[in-house]
Image (cartoon, rainbow, N blue to C red; front, side, top):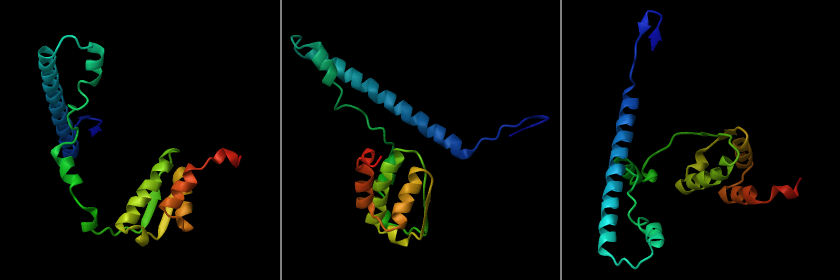
Length: 156
């Protein structure tokens, strides 16, 4: 933070760590792409030259794309959410138009984990308010999906 007498820069350790993770991920991806290009060049040198280059260039790297998941993200994906307790009782949905369609999937995930039963209060703004209202009156994720995918232009 700065003040009148001079600027003082405070660095947040979380920001520094996030920056390090992003830089490491970018280095890893760059290395992987360079390796893939080298392999592709070696494959091109060793293959028959009668092949059409447009087709080979189109399909060449589809199976060689590096994973964008780092070790931390892979470890997080291995955690089973059912092994943890979640003490929350309120559920708030944001607005955002098309985000409202994603809420049906989020509710389905909460139903699968058995967490939707402990929710006592729902709130939201815009599309989130519609979802919150439907949940508050007893709709489930399948009902939400059915409701949100119907053609509403027929009502107007």
